[in-house]
Image 1 (spheres, one colour):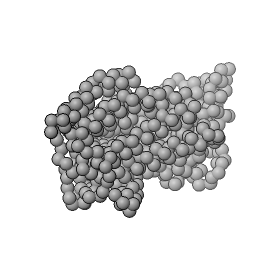
Image 2 (cartoon, each protein chain N blue to C red):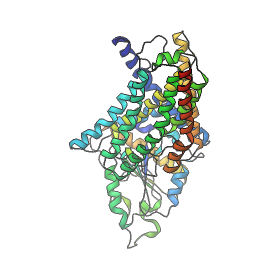
Image 3 (cartoon, rainbow over the protein chains, first blue to last red):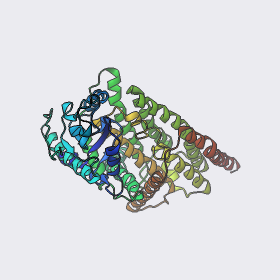
Image 4 (cartoon, each protein chain N blue to C red):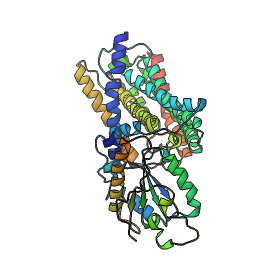
Length: 156
Length: 304
């Protein structure tokens, strides 16, 4: 079961006010050059099907409710990957009055993938780490502790 | 067909024991063919199995009342009827059968798509309802052609018994019918260019939007079993009559594999059509051929 969890991470991609740079890089990590499907990655249309929530963007005020709803719609065991510098630190938009970031104020984040935008191979590595966390978390069911474990150093 | 052979066919070959691994294998080919056509390496061989096991270990959203019970029941009904359809295929020579099992097979093949329609509506999600409406329209369009093709095949050979159909040599009319069936299969299996009901990303996941965990695993399995049953039906109609049982089984598997490869390549090479184009395709372009096949079959039958 743990092995299957590690080998079959299904993603749901959520944009919380991103500039579309990281979103393009997520798509790039599925293209022939990086081919994340070798790890069993599948981009799903519905959050109900997903294991890993990929969030991009600095979390605008409008997006907060949506992020919480979608996080609750993903069924456990689940993991959250923050893609890009924006969800980690709100990046250049820091102190903006339209933002309510960073992301780990609202949902527990497991892996941060820094970069503006991050390279596709960094995204694939982040997803692989999140899948390993997911497999560990599945062992101690029920109700995983929402751990904000930083596996990658966040660039300040 | 007595009870023992019926059970053996349902549970062992070509039923569940064979059909479930075959379903995963076909699902893998579907994804691998798309990946290879796009110049990727694609998922590992065991991927559909990993997906299935992982989905079994996930939670399901809390559901209550009759709608919840129905939502839990639809995938199980779909899997059961698809497995039953696979079990009816006359793969091994002299495996028995009964008059009219072709009709039962067609009815069982139709049940998963009815379940998908019902599931989308009972999920009460707007995307599920759009997907269900599309599935209903699509099913009305392709089924006319599909059933006419089957009727033409059966009428030209004077029988509704699958085993007798498999044993008789193929006539030119049967080939016409088989081509019509092949045209309908992408719509039946929700593949591109007719992947309207589940239209990934466009309407989220269509009728499956609200499904998760073990229920979604059952939907994936029923999709795989539909693959096995539909390609198996074509393989039975195409395959020459062989008396050696192991050779018959190998020919059946090879022919199914060829059909799966062909359909996956088509799916990878095409984009999704709009619903009106799809409906027009089936009602205007292919219906004529199906009507021609059926009328010539009936005409030949009257003459003989």
